[in-house]
Image (cartoon, rainbow, N blue to C red):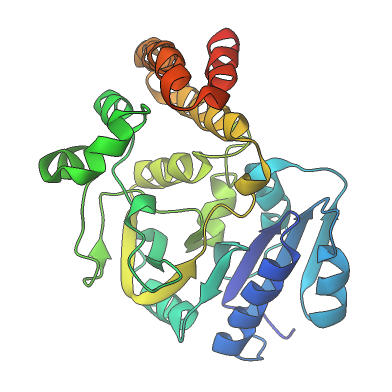
Length: 303
């Protein structure tokens, strides 16, 4: 590679061999082969064929083989230290780049130095918009209306509640956004990413991207949504390897850590809301889905 690449892409891999292959192919198919791109795969001790696949099929990729599952934040940060591009793109392995999405994001960033973080238009596999990964930053009201079991299913279906606690943005228009950007595909100036220390490693899984976006805003930079950059996000490839209890527990633990970090006085109410939710769901689960009772009871004891 001659000179500094314009873009470094970091892909975190954990037992997602086929998805990682698909993601890498989409990167090189849409970008092409040139020295302006650096791709780094940080593998979190996969036990499938991920490492051999990258070595054999993508020799141009820098491969980092972590000796254990470092989690999302640390796994990405290990690669960030080696990134040489002007911009760095944190990209999930369960994504498929569409057309000129990567070059469009770089072009936009080059035109506006205020941009500290940029996210694309995330799509489902059927090309419909993936709204659930683009929402307002967490508040106590959002915890209650969005992240409790029953209300979390109702709120997205009621227009005024959805707008108030989730937030909405015209998916067809690019520009500055007040909403958080998804870590599934998040681009930022590499210098800023390293200055901020990348993702906060106190978050093992979930909320790392929300925390980073919040810190980007605090530097005076803006968050930017690029409607013209389209990327399919299959979603949940790594977390699907966990039990339902582990997914819920880790998400709520990360939410509690987020509030403890920025609004410690409100954190006790976050814990209380989640505990009450578990208490309510235990008898309801007995009637609807008894298999969930053990998980809620365990959550109540551990949280």
